[in-house]
Image: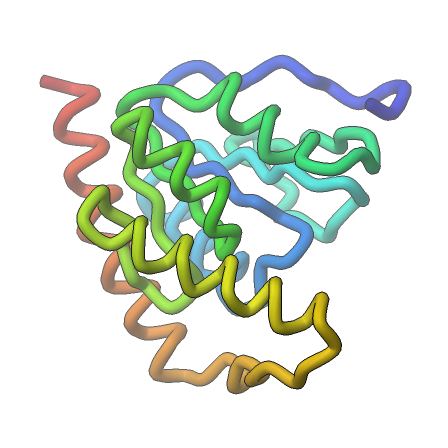
Length: 165
């Protein structure tokens, strides 16, 4: 971790962002949610990112090692928190912890859909390793952004009601 970085975790329910590969429009939606709903956000990444300057938002920069950001999130996330990630192995770990994990397109990872997602991810990894072309993901669309915003709002509402009740 970098010197001078505050690594304390904000208390209370929080939205966790797996920051290195998170599209900018997704971060904007999360920061807007944080401002409007007074929800804490922790962005974890291997590199510094542009974040909303707010006492509700913190950034944790971990080392460049493989899965360091993932491990940090798993080690610090709370049961009423929400994680935003496109990383399938991280999502699998979070689902096993019982945490809500949402991808940037607004799809919620569940125990029921993780095995298919892991199998697809592993197949694509093997194809790339063998030098075979694999499909590339389409660009991030406004439809994806709206679907994500809707899913986030639904789960933030649930998260806040659980933390207060």
